[in-house]
Length: 301
Image (cartoon, rainbow, N blue to C red):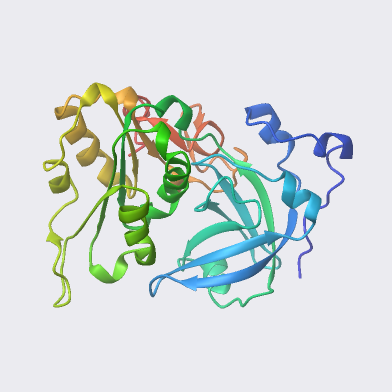
């Protein structure tokens, strides 16, 4: 069984410094693996589970922090590692929340894991959504399918700083009702956090009584003030064109729309070159980009 990555690559004095979210600092920490354990597992759908992962060392756990939109490399010793967007609150220092879809060898083994299983965490990596810049404005949080997982971190940030934002709308769409994630939190978002949550599915079943259609249908029902609104869009890349182009029709500038290209990531370090588009590396320069930048990255979506 493969052991955890050794800790002696970087000086210990450097590793004790608080994390700073700059490119140079992020790359300085890539060789450090935090030994961690799974403390809780929540089944969300047949294909997705939410894992609570706690860094074992208390000092390291207290130091670890992230910004909404960033991701970690999750290592399963003996099998490999995968990049996973962080789905929890940046203020939660007790454990890291990762929503994982069963899609490959590593994630399939993880879905068989139980509480107490040991894993490794590297990171955080990547840039983040500009939550500070968005303060004082209306916020559109738009997710398709598994896109609700990376969208949950900025949602937590907004709800924990609710007085600093104006109207907040969550638009969430899936193919079928049984693919909806985090259903147990919907009432809290609407009643406690004063958020307008709208959900739509493409193919309803006999239990579904909500809206039916594409997610762009929900945009037509919103009173959008384009110069007072920021949008965060997460989901399959094909969705970006339809949603962001619809937002442009409402007059929202492209530099006020942000998308996550986290599905293109692999190593997290810009070494494997599987996520690069020209000179841009999604895992290092992203995964968050404004829509104007995305349109200027050939074949990004």
